Length: 287
Image (cartoon, rainbow, N blue to C red; front, side, top):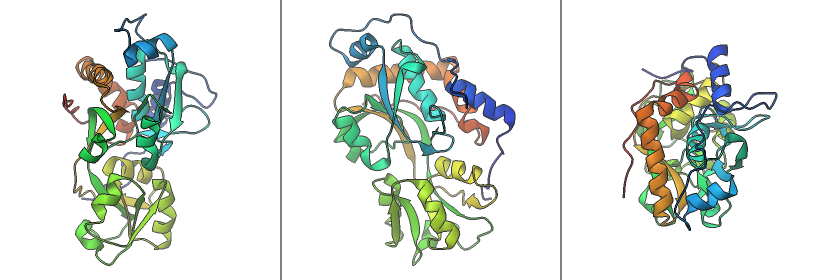
């Protein structure tokens, strides 16, 4: 059965998401993530430097409904809440997080060049990326799927894309994966830019992770539906500087604590959980 718009976000669910994210249309903030009181870290570590500075720069997506979406205030979504969990454990409140937009193509360069301290941006962990950056997590596991016009019946999976055009984002794991099924790929810098070509019939489908597609469908009435036949596993991780083992392990500790105390579930249910079922949190990878 195909996943259509999903559950419409009610006023109550939307309000919960805004409160948890610390963002409203008026720009007011409400911190719901615990902020550690003067935590101490070993000198010379990334944690010590960030805690002393009292601020952190986090890269995230600005166009991903449910995970990272920016309107007039700070971005909101599940990735944003995960970033706040890490910041809070460093003693940094939400109003001292500098959010920087990172698209799929620039996540590694932003980390390598020090433009961000970490990236939380529907960022799939894979071996190629591990050559350039390190990952904490995963904190969520998605799967690549297809978004089509509502009522379409000729595409039930990637095997049906032979001879058809598909849209995705340049530099993404999705672009690499879909190339196994079609060579007619339109690659852009944001998934939202794929919706116009899908409406016009220029492409037969949009492809990326199922949770991202569900967010796009949810935001666009009854125009689109997710095929709901995922064909990959996409573990989302938090990108940090290569071989920064101490910082990676610290973030993994924060994630595991959030799994145990229910903070992760609360963050999910107030954001992505307004549309999607609550999954089990994945085990972090202590590589």
